[in-house]
Length: 258
Picture 1: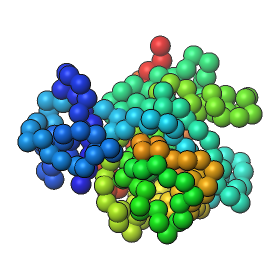
Picture 2: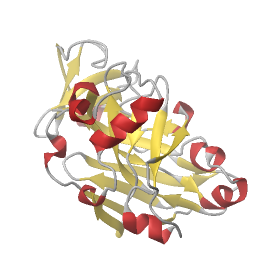
Picture 3: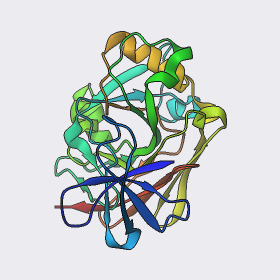
Picture 4: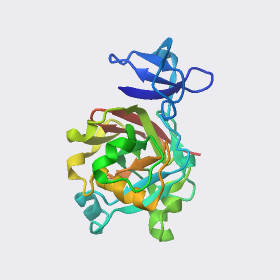
């Protein structure tokens, strides 16, 4: 099952994408706060605009250098424990929303990632119980201003600026989603520029949830970005970036400078 959030010109609604991807079964409310219950309304995909499938009420917790080869390409070693940082919920955008390059940066990179959506308030979750707190999985692009990342000595501005956290297109709700490795791919203007697999993660999703929830209480709708594979690179105004995770779909965004 894949849950999406959309608008047809009115207030945002949630729906389940039908298997043929041509239409949506509209839900009665927010599935993070109530049961997934169809409203009886059916709409076609062509008649809606997809939104970010979740707007975190609290936070996006991201993991740095969680792939060996990516850590090496960034000129460092893999941390002995997960290396965490935050992205504010104001950084979140949805499918086809523009990534706006900040005026103060001339070196912005894409980073395709598997993202985890939390479904319940939780603290001190054991790795073996991670399924109890996960609503589902989506695609993220951890857009990063590399020059600011180097200059600032910390990453709040470089990775938290407006539009730096595209999410979508939907949330796959499947407790066994991680039972198989998932390919992660980025295309810029149709050309494959990044390719990796979740099997290459240093710390897996269960371990990350245990580590993160030991430090922070997680709330419904919080999102965890699990790190990016090797192959990050620049994006420029006029580009179109497509980040894909096998089994979920493709998150596409144009790049602009204003």
